[in-house]
Image (cartoon, rainbow, N blue to C red; front, side, top):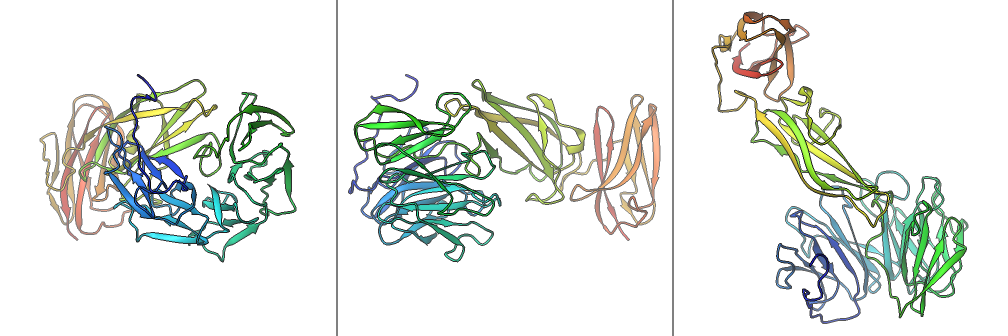
Amino acid sequence: MIGPNPGFYLDILTTHQGSQGVFIADLNKDGYLDLITSLEITPGYASILWGTATGYNTTNRTDLPIIFGIHNIEIADLNYDRFLDIIFVQYQNGYNIIYWGSSGGYSPGNYSSLPGPGSHGASVADLNNDFYLDIIFNAWYSSQSYIYWGDSNGYSTSNMLILNPGSCYGGSCVQDLNNDDYLDILYYRTSSPQVIYWGRATGFSDLDTMRILIPEGATGGIICDLNADSIIDIFFNSLGGLSYITWGPDWNTMTSFPVSNDHHAMFREIGNTYNRQYYDEYLSSISNIAGLWVCWGTITWDDSLPSGSSIDMMIRVGHTPQPDTTWSDWLQFNKDDSIPDSLDFHIYMQYKAVMRYTNPAYLPILYSVQIDYELVPGVAENVVTSEKCFNIHPTIITDHSLISYSIKENTDVKVAIYDITGQCVAVLVNSHQGRGQHTVSWNGCDNSNKRLPSGRYYAVLSTEDETKASQFIQLR
C-alpha cells in the first residue's frame, strides 16, 4: 500500500494533553524525517523521535526541557551554521526556547530564551529583506506580538518591534499578499475580524493594516492559491461548525465548509522559509576526494518532477575547506552534462539543487546526485609520477628546468605549473602543437616573472583527451 496505512501506526503515550506542537524535518540529514513533538512522553520534556528505515520508536528519541503550553514549533537554521534549530513556543513563564542544532545533535544545555507575550504561535521569515531570518511571536492571552529582527549578532530584546494585533488563538502566517516584494503578516485572531499587517520598506505599523471579516474567530490557516487562478487565497480554520476560504485578490468573498471544531492548522507555512516563494534549495556538503585534485566528468541525478515543477542543478569548486572569494561562481548544468575543464584541478566541490514548483500540492523530489571524476595522476601527497612521456628535470629545481613531453597527435596543449593548493601560478605552453616530442624551459618564475618561493609544485600537461602531472620541489 502506497501512502498512509491505517494498519501501520505508532501510539505515543504522553503525560500531558495540553501541549500540541508538532513539526517534521530531517534534523540529522540522514535521509529520514524526524518527528519533533511537545507531547510530554517524559513530564516537562519535548521529544525528537528519530526517523529510521523502520519508522519511529519512542525509545529512539532525544528529550529537551520545555514549559507547559507548547502550541507551536518552528524549525530553521537561525544562526546559519547549516544545522537546523528548534523554536518551542511557550505561553507560560513568559519566554520561548530556541534549541540550537550542532554536529552533536541537540542537548538541554544548548539553548537560548526569548521573552514572549504569553506566546501561542510563531512565524519565521526574512521580513525586511536583509537575508537574516526574523521571528514573529503572537499571543492568545495578550494583544501584543513581538517581532525579533535577526542580524549577525542573533536575536535580542534590544532589536525588536512590538505590534498590537489583538489576541491570536490561531497564530500567524506570512506571505507577500500585495506583490510589493515585502512580506505581510496575517494574524489569526481569536475573534473576528482577522488582520493583515502590510510589510513596507519602513517596517510594520499598527496604523497600516487591513481587516478581513469572517463570521467566527480563527484557530489557524494557510495562505496559497487554492483555485489555480494564480491569485493568493486565504483559508481560515475555526472552532465552530464552519471553516472558511476568502478568495483573493481582495478576500471579501468567501466559501464555507462544515467542520467539527477545526483546531489549528498545518505545522509548516507554504513556500520558502525566507521569502515564501515557491522554491527551496538543497546545499550539499563539501566534497573532498581524499585530499586529491580531480578531473570532473559528468553530472546526472535521479528525480521526480510533477507538472509545473523543475530542478536547477549547480556546482562550484575551490581550494579551501570552506567557500570564500577564491571559489568559482555557481555553474548551472543539465542532466548528463559534462563538467567543463575550468573546474578541474580543485580539491573541494559542492553542488546546489534549486527545486521549484507552481503548485505546493505537487513538489519536485531529488532522490540522488551522481558526479563522475578521475584522480589527477601524480597530484597527491604520496604519489610521484615520472612517466617517460612527461618528465621534468631536475625534480629539485634551483635555477632552470626542462619539461619534456610527447603527444600522440596534433592537439591543443597546455603546460602549467600549480602550487600545492591547486592554484595555477605559471602557464608555459598554451597552443596547438603537432604530434611528437616537445621540450619547454622554465626559469622558476610565475606569470609575472617573479621567482616562486620554495616549496612543492606540480607540472600539469593537458591535451584534448588526457591530463598528466609530475611533482617537483623548487628551492630558492
